[in-house]
Image (cartoon, rainbow, N blue to C red; front, side, top):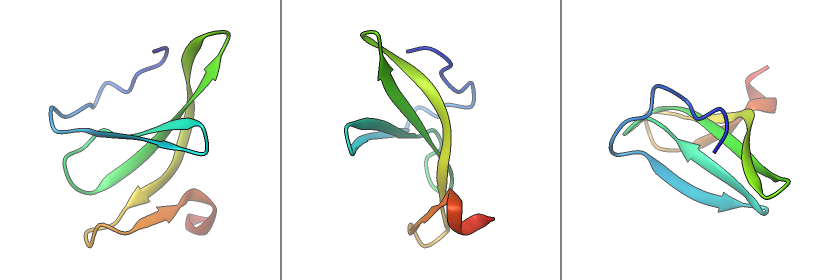
Length: 64
């Protein structure tokens, strides 16, 4: 993976969303990052949203 976030917690969560990989680097609340496949490698694409204290995902578009 290219551009892996440095604030990765040992209890991070990873899942696929629409063919891309989403990573929640913290163990509870915080940012969710997207990685996209490019030339056979996974490249950091930026934040896609956050998880709030109740565990609900809030897309980045709704945070503006």
